[in-house]
Image (cartoon, rainbow, N blue to C red; front, side, top):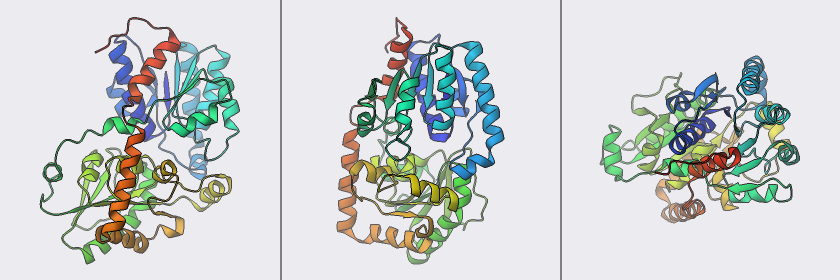
Length: 371
């Protein structure tokens, strides 16, 4: 059984399911997911929520409770060999308690951000979980003295990047002019992120076009999301082509999240922005223990990319940083150098494959089909 709660986690669940099925083709997988997990043969008992933020979760509490009820019932009735939890901590830690009570082994894949806030969860997680597979090397340290086996397996995003075509070829594939430069504006993957960020990126697009009319502006979205604001005709919206769009870009404005890591692994200079509801931001800011919010800066241990949050997530400021990335050669070169170093962290790692193997180790499965 796999339990995930939002879009990026659902993608990791789909990639993991594919590897499990490759190694053990007769495995039955069920859980909470979305269309990508379903496409990999997962029987869905409930959809992911797409919710981010404390206030936003409160608004969807009834939906979340219903999903938890379905998950609990399926867990007890089907009693899987392994329960795999992917991030989504408040929901999944509670589900782990149900699993523990029923003697169902638990693998936590994608640790909650205990390094950012609520580090006390480490103790609770270690009392409920059998194995931990983490995405970042520094996370291993947090579980070091708990007795919980914890392994750095790498980040699934690194597995999704397989760009072999030139920028010109990528532009043609996206229906763009191969001879003109591209800027990408990434508002996020969740519907509530789109709602908060679309006005910002629209104004950024207007400012870019006003000063650099030859630049092509692309807004990459997931298939499940849509812009509800009217955008100018010179803005191209593409679906499920984020990697290709960012790979052929000169610079990107990226909503904080997994997309910042993907952009870094593609060595595309960026500015990071984000807006939460005022109450959620206040609570997070008062509880968080990190200097940075973007994965790029956290992994680098310094400010490699500018972070523009809340009031600073203003079109004028974001545009000014994009302009600098286009015109300041030294600044741009230093950022690209730092982004390439992030790629070295994940070199040689195959997280979906390794995590599938860990599932087999926990369950005691034999005779994996190695292709």
